[in-house]
Amino acid sequence: MTESQKKLNREIMPIGQWLPHDHIPWVIAGPCSAESAEQMLATARGLVGSPHVKAFRAGIWKPRTRPNSFEGIGEAGLQWLAQVKAETGLPTATEVAKTEHVELCLKHGVDILWVGARTTVSPFAVQEIAEAVKGVDIPVLVKNPINAELGLWVGAIERLHAVGVRKLAAIHRGFSTYVEMEFRNDPKWQIPIELKRQWPDLPLICDPSHISGNRQFIEPVSQMALDIGIQGLMIESHIDPDHAWSDAKQQVTPEVLCRMLDRLRVRDAPITDRDVKQKISRLRAEISHIDAKIIQDLAERMKWVAEIGRLKQQHNIPVLQLERWENLLGSHIAKGKELGLDEEFIKDLFELIHAQAVKQQL
Image (cartoon, rainbow, N blue to C red; front, side, top):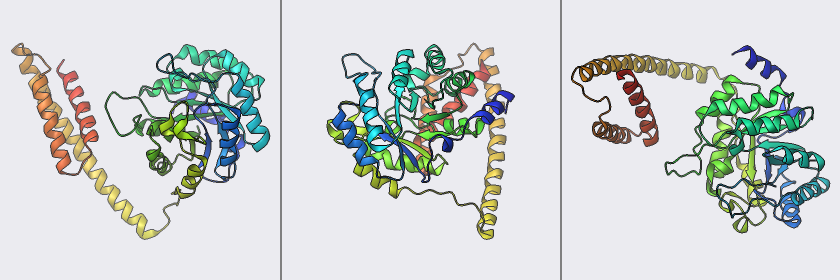
């Protein structure tokens, strides 16, 4: 860990100090978009009874991929957030993308701000928000960028920390992908895990609504998040989700959400049983042995790759043999499926190995 990482870790305020909670998961919930005072209040009334729900969220400005779609109700929605807070006592949260948004949120008493995935990709936009919150004691949550780049996520957090924000947290909402899959966004769990490894004291929240894109997957994705140690969730809830003005498919009613939260299991028991500890130790030893063999086999593979590269150079043969690569990848995927391995895992693994092989031959 670098000195700057250690400093950031030391200075981040524990989330329990600014969003007290006594149940796991603790949840920030509410509609994707503010639509009316009645919709906001009805949704909040359905959520406030859950011991898990600790803050109310709603999108006031909605950055849409294409124009001519609903882009948020604007400043009027901030007044509705204030009404929710006055009636339920729940702190309120919304997304900001520029200085004007921050100023209006502060004017209307919004309690928590978050930086959206489309904004995190732009260091200029993040810096603008950082300057707007400089000297203001308000929590700021940072969603991962839409593309799978840890550096942009970290950079956004560092920019906010640099202007004095200490109530910081990261939100994992998955990453855009051109490959069709059951989820709207690829979770790529290894990225938030690596973020947590680098900044263990940085609170991490999962947004299963945006990962899923479909309400049927919200519960299993929430459970996955809990299983890797993420204790906070941000979930979209609407009093009438089928008729929501944005992201209707990924929202659930307050009643459905409250029941779901009660079903989720928190696995936080330490390994204390001596027999279990010994069994896990033996299994880990077997895995370590296999890992060492994998590394040895990869080193052996790269020796032959280098030899092939020399022959290609001598005989003026291009490095990339696309037809052979496609056939080889198809064969690996088929073999993996026979052995019960996930197709995407095999594809990602051998694409990485192939990229290294090409690099070695250039």
